[in-house]
Image (cartoon, rainbow, N blue to C red):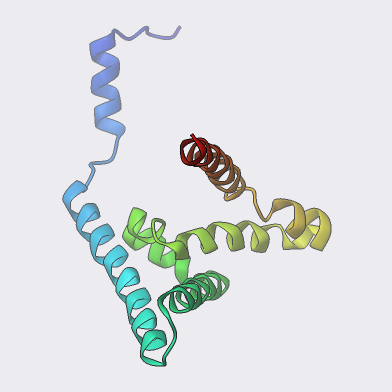
Length: 149
């Protein structure tokens, strides 16, 4: 027969079994790695600007470069290790978005290019894209109404 635990006994059991959180260490790692990724992005932006590109072109090239690096490091299984070390510090910048697209594509590659890679590639990033596009449409409509009114 099973023993029925009281709320306090159950909470003690959960506290005993739950791992201790190393909150400050995790925050520090996320801050340092996220900042490092952003610093690398700024480095590329500065290089592109010094080559005579205007701000819009330099920004576009920087974004493409960071997405490429995120996808490359995901393919080489480096980004996953970085994620284990840095936590949220690795998913916030644009490289984390590239990782969220490439990871499922690699995982479902064995199911084929159409039913595997093609259908599962946006498994994680799809809702983010849909939300972003939807909010952009609403914001654009509001902006249009305010401009024309």
